[in-house]
Length: 93
Image (cartoon, rainbow, N blue to C red; front, side):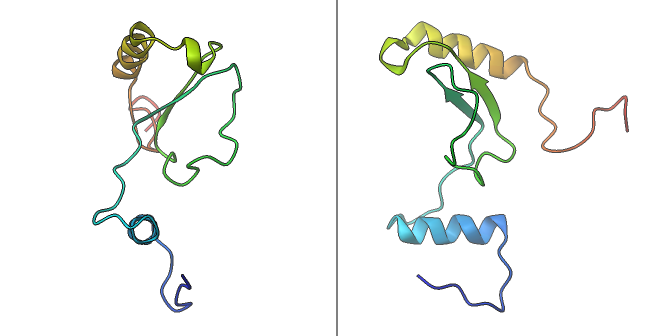
């Protein structure tokens, strides 16, 4: 798929194009939490655009050993975070 040069790329447009490429009727939902297992602390070019405002959680546990309890702990951790979506903390603003 070629993109017309005249139209700038936006996050919304990229999401629509990705949905077309994946033959999906709707764009993929926003990534809120990305859990990376295996001890690596990088994204390795995985969902870079989609994870711009995602919360990242890096765990040393390998994927086959990841349990429902680990997922529950990750969700608890996610819920405890103050999401600012690129904004400054209130005290700094």
